[in-house]
Image (cartoon, rainbow, N blue to C red):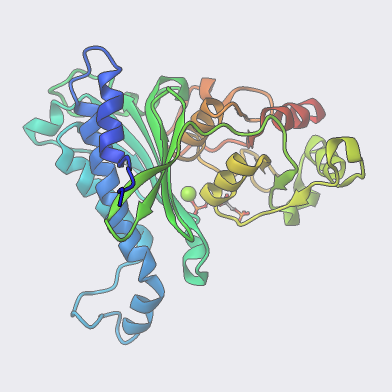
Amino acid sequence: MKGYSITTLNEFIIRRQANIPYAKGELSRLLHHIGIAAKVVNKKVNKAGLVDVLGEAGNINVQGESQQKLDVFADMQFTAALSDSGECCGIASEENQEIITFDDDLSKDGKYIVCMDPLDGSSNIDVNVSIGTIFSIYRRISPRGDKAQLIDFLQEGNKQIAAGYIIYGSSTMLVYTTGQGVNGFTLDPSIGEFCLSHPNIKTPETGSIYSLNEGNYLKFPEGVKKYVNYCKEEDKSTKRPYSLRYIGSLVADFHRNLLKGGIFIYPETASSPKGKLRLIYECNPIAWIAEQAGGKASDGKNRILDIKPETLHQRTPFYTGAHGMVEKVESFI
Ligand code: AHM
Ligand code: MG
């Protein structure tokens, strides 16, 4: 009987490294550590409901450990993995107001910084709906050997070295890019490895799904209202009316649209004039993946990846997905 061949995430990362001249393996090690943290967080996410039940009395579970909220747990796990890698001198996370610098000699010498949303869509945890982790890696600007500084984190998205997300869904997947296309790996729980399942992902040029929180319709800008109405109009030649699909978990909404063809919109609204989503650890990594898969990402007018961040937790309106659909909504705006 012939065995079947699989490509694990680590093997893939190492093969890719060979394509980059002078690569010394630092980025590969960093990605490898992100993969490990993803597996640990995945295990915890899978047990979330169970742990909550067991932990009800005084928030202490049967092992005597105090309960942590999953997003705090994910933040700690990814922070530890990045610190352990020795390749990363600091991180910015949705969970922390300020940047965190790793000040041991090895990490201070690290070339990279990481921006992350350790557990996005966390309002979905309690109801067993898909959630995700988003990450983005940059080469530092400050000199190696020094502490990481804020300027290392306020770089345009077009300077990203690697970006990706993990979706904890009906199966767990890690999707990432280093600027040579987008590849997806599904976690095979029986062997505990992310295995290449979606090589060279390309998103359809146009699609028939639109994803946004339409409950906010009355607060949308006029152009977005017009686009929403356009999505609902009957026109067989453009497959309209489109289907509305909205999970309320950016990673899950984006991932579905990436594979099936669609647009994700989180616009500015009357109550959030800058939108809701954060530029550096939510929009930039997703935008780069969209572009690498042949799609598009904008704030309605400008390319997301060209926006110069001014603050760590800066928000931006976000329109991303199939190229043709993002162009269309921009034409309404
Ligand atoms: P979070 O970072 O607090 O989890 O919020 C981000 C999430 C995204 O995953 C999702 O796209 C959006 O918030 C949903 O917001 P809303 O509930 O306003 O539709
Ligand atoms: Mg988030």
